[in-house]
Image 1 (cartoon, rainbow, N blue to C red):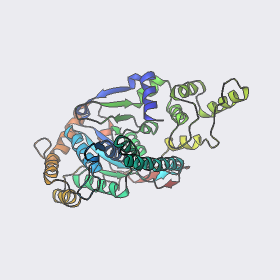
Image 2: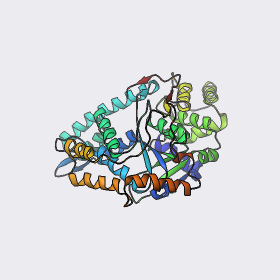
Image 3: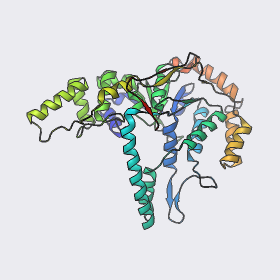
Image 4: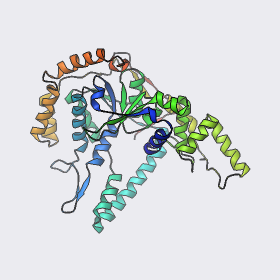
Length: 389
């Protein structure tokens, strides 16, 4: 279900599950962060246009984009300055069920590129920017650079076998993180207990969505919520035409399961009681999509996957960001200083002592503040054959 659709439905039907929180209210928490989503967000919001200089974006001297690196650098420091321990999770290969959605996105990007070129030729910078943003892509090199930078900063990085938001949700369910930080509402469908979104400003509060409170107010169980999201349209199945979130919610409330919803819609079509028939996709793969949401391919055990926060590698970080990526030396020096001395005592002291005390003093810190080592095991969905995103 789209972000706007789901948020609109929750604000109407389950307002109590959404609350505004300041970052410092999350002090002592471990948060699983959707890195791929954050990178895309940084690349988009830093694009603009100037009537004198034309289209603008953050780049190095050679014209290579750097917004993804700058954004992750600043957000990581922002988290840690507020006592939050981030685990950055990157997408792996997309599920087979997502192939159709990926094809649609690629086609839309091609059309956006064509319109961008046309608008640029005509001198319409506002339209050119609009279509340039729609054509924003993340390359494998950009992803590799972000992973390298974060590791040099001393942050744990997890390469998910498939969807990053599914891996984040799994970390929360396993008790290794308190919440998932992403703009992707699918994290709730994958079962994260807490979703954090709206990281736009250091001063503005973010939104925290609680899954159990949401289900309680919607009067749905988790499986019914999954069916609701699929009914409205998701990345793994075609949507039913003409069904918005309110209608979808009503249908699930009345019929409980998508099998029964489809049966009812087919009966309505036969009766001819509607002015126009419900359009049910020929290949409505909701059973497979449901299984993917319930049992995504994720790393479940972590004996060979490091989740620990370390001191930054100063020389290597400076060499990489300043020498390879063209960052200003002062910017990198300031970032390293903050990482080393967030509370005036040094990074290691901050991480070991500050977070340990915070976890003990916070009665509801829960399992999300513990990091344990277990055996690596990957759980695969029976229906998801991996393909490159």
